[in-house]
Amino acid sequence: MREKIILRCTVCKRRNYTTTKNKRTTPDKLELKKYCPFDRKHTLHKEIKMK
Image (cartoon, rainbow, N blue to C red; front, side):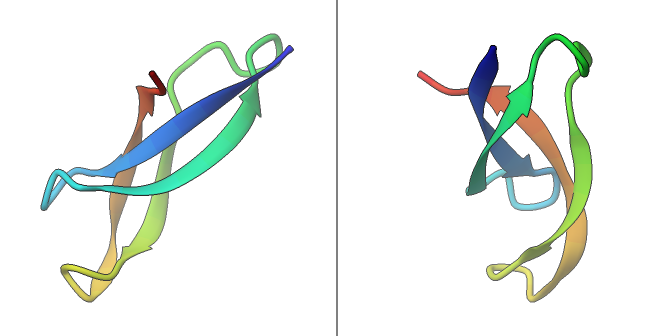
């Protein structure tokens, strides 16, 4: 039941991370503070669907 997702930076709008999540336990979209190498700081990354 795990689904592949992509995390996109909210500042620079680039796709920086891929991960998986359990859709049954977390049906909402993920929002994590991750390091963005393009901005060189920790920013909020939101989930987008993987194609």
